Image 1 (tube, one colour):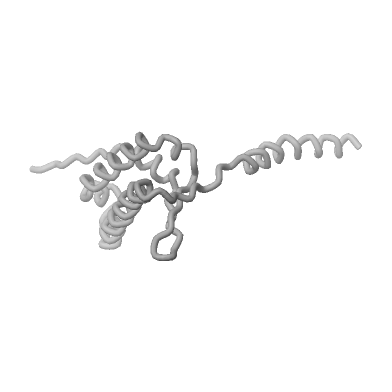
Image 2 (tube, rainbow, N blue to C red):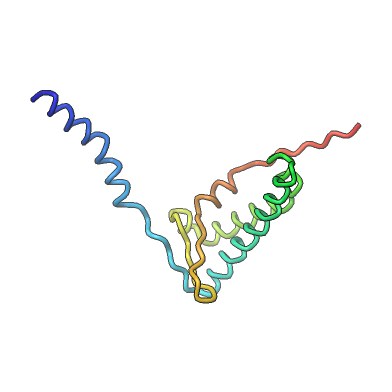
Length: 129
């Protein structure tokens, strides 16, 4: 009987916070305002273009750090663009996902990735002899 009580108590301690967190998870925001869609499309398109260049660089045999530094100006611009957009739309910071429709397809941007991107610092050092 005591084991059962302890088991139930442990389950409540571990499971209830997870269930509560899942219950209050923010829903995605479906953007309809043309200006908002333009803002997020600009970031999304530039992000994917930069990722494509980065992945091609990595596939060529270079390391992650080398490839990020190779395209540093792209990452710096993307970071600036993202920061500026979040300053104009601070409510987006609380959301996990922004969505919009383009060519009858739902396009999505995960704000967590953008927040992580804006918090990263690229340290690129060139050594020449």
